[in-house]
Amino acid sequence: MLDIEDIQQARTRIKDAVRRTPCLRTRFFHSPAMTDASLSLKLECLQVSGSFKARGASNKVLALPESARQRGLVTASGGNHGLGVAYAGRCVGAPVAVYLPASTPASKVAKLERWGAHVIFEGDVWDDANAAAMGAAERDGMTYVHPFADPAVMAGQGTVGLEILEQSPSVDTVLVSIGGGGLISGIATALKAGKPGVKVIGVEPTGAPTLTRSVAAGRVVTLDAITTDANTLAPRRTEQLNLDIVRARVDAILLVEDDDMRDAARWLWFEMGLGVELSAGAALAALRTGAYRPARDENVCAVVCGAGTDGLQ
Image (tube, rainbow, N blue to C red; front, side, top):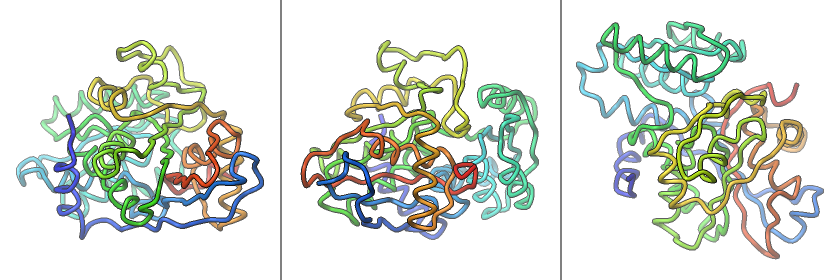
């Protein structure tokens, strides 16, 4: 299982490739849930490539032997992981192919193409694109980079947790959005190692309760359908590696509606001038709706995971 040494090594490896993003205290917003608590926002929307995904992708790619890089990198993504791999590939001069579901925002497709990635559309959801990417890796001999079920990728994402502890040492609770579970696996590992009493709360869309269902069942469950518009939080299944970490190190998982994520994203724009994707509103939405209610004087940090404009639509 992923451990703190993996994350510390990742921080050293990627220190010149990614940004140490701000963790900002913010004013209380108009919500009974936050009246007596303190809120900070970890702004991964300001990360290179536009999201935390650059951390994990960079750690994976930089750890690869040169021969594996030069065979070419291939991945599947809802947008952000593909951008992270394209960024990392560009840093080391490796060709990159990214398989995308049809729902990927046009702005992310254009950015991928500007960074030189070869973009291929496959299916309606991430799982369709991922099956095609894995097939391409086997057929063409390319190096496959999994977006969430790879220890090197999770270790890179875990560097977010190291920074939160350094920037907000009094933190009591951290809320993290969940797609496949790579981000929360890394963050929870870092936080529990550095401050065992901290609570780690995951947040999923009601239209893609991937980890919620799997944790409840005690095994990896494949969803029958995805009904959320938050395409970067929308795999139909997680993997055993992620499920094991979430069960061991995550305190609870909450569900929020798309409209609540959209409301949170609009709040970030109007109150803080931050343009974020719909998925990036998930953690904040759990607070604004009262799905998570902090105690008096509790220090809460919400991870704002990615930039975009679909949260404002």
